[in-house]
Length: 144
Image 1: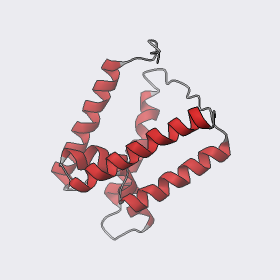
Image 2: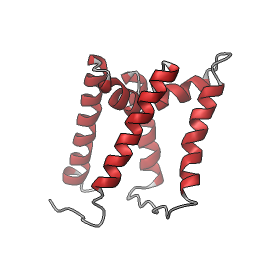
Image 3: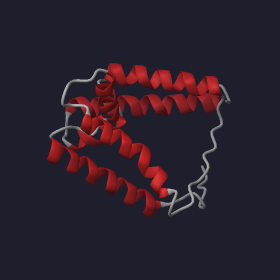
Image 4: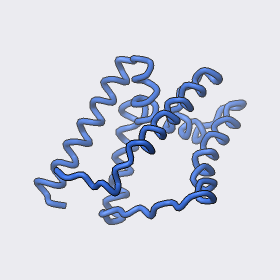
């Protein structure tokens, strides 16, 4: 295994992780809600009166933040080694997994584990293991 030292950014990664944790903690302290993106977005798809404003603001912030960041820094261009079909299939599988798991990586992996939720620990271990197996199979068995 080799490390791409040009892409190795422990300070930026640690800072980003701290900011995500801080934002999740502030969100639960002030709103009493978990910052799980799938649940927040899902609530917009089946709206409840009086529950829409904060969800729109949250999703709007997710969209606006990188746009504002572009004003101050160069945003790297992503390079994805997959076709459109593979990306669509991957997105659908993530959506199905999110529904079966009762949440996503932000809800279970960030917020649930920080609350020591056994359900979130199991869900996070499951989706991490599934990710490891998928990468291993694609890279070593299917040579994709």
